Length: 249
Image (cartoon, rainbow, N blue to C red):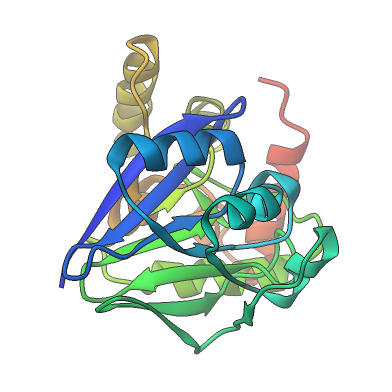
């Protein structure tokens, strides 16, 4: 079983993802940040859309659902909270559920914290995860609805995936995240990665996707217990998250 991922930038800093199950040719889009861009990319690659896989309810993730369904007839799959901005998902899913795209099986993982019902989709056969706004390259999502305990548990759930898991996060925030990371962590591996990120962005290159192993090694939110030893892990995470929320660099 293999999948093909077609990634493209949209809106100001989002990425869109089209995913095709190579065995059957069935395709999905992960979130709907920009309906026009998604429909344009579908036409470009020549794929017929079967599923919309929403990670959470925010408009830059589910706001294009209605237009894309109208144009393609795709089935909307996602957490219950998606109903907050319009039509409820055709199939409501939560942690432990499995979503099939042809022969590809996506495990649904609870990744709440950014929003209460946020989920991620993990293809265990191909070691690919679509994580929405929970985990970013060198960052993590703001806690708009959840608690530090919830978000820390979600990040640990993702961190427990295989290190070679390819992680598709939804925004190009990496240079900003790197500037913050350098303000709280002087690890040599982080410094080297940050230099690569700044150079890549100067060349106009994307920094997404990343991998679980790379994030465990350099992401200050996953490294929080090492940065603030002697306190409960979720409190260490909360302190790093609060520092990022007020960071002006």
